[in-house]
View 1: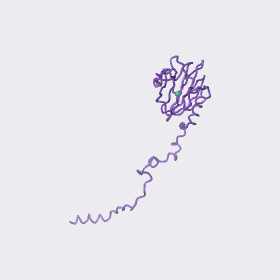
View 2: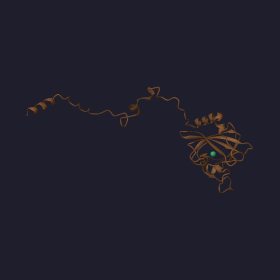
View 3: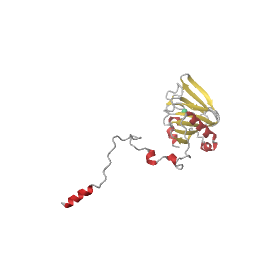
View 4: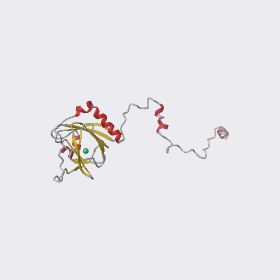
Length: 211
Ligand SMILES: [Fe+2]
């Protein structure tokens, strides 16, 4: 019994547990945590604030500017030009978040056939030679040449055909956003109900992306 009395006497010296406040302040974040609270503010550490990352375009104006910049950098695209008697030649120049840029080489007479671009919009220009765009709109069929320096912007649903109707090879640059994953082919003329494209590349562009 004396031993039990000693234990009870020692317990009197333990500090009392603090009682919980009546109402805790609401946390700033749902779970009480955030990237900043866990890792610290990266802007507070200059060596963590990356400044060497490329700035990717996100607007039509930005995409057009990127196309012009690549077009002006001849050393970048010229080594990828390649003419093939059987098909237009494709080379992917650049990819970024939500877009990709392709270089196409065209011999005289090569054509895309009438097509749309699925869910993609885009910007294109001609780097060498001349292409002719035939488009179908609510106002009817139109045709216009596109030469070096000319810029063409198209949105989802645009239906057109690009053809090298000249006697010289041509090179063009095409930016698609989002990246082109679908091209629907349409009959070139009423006499072509099967919709056979003039260029077999247009029927299966994915096949050429593997080149
Ligand atoms: Fe197109």
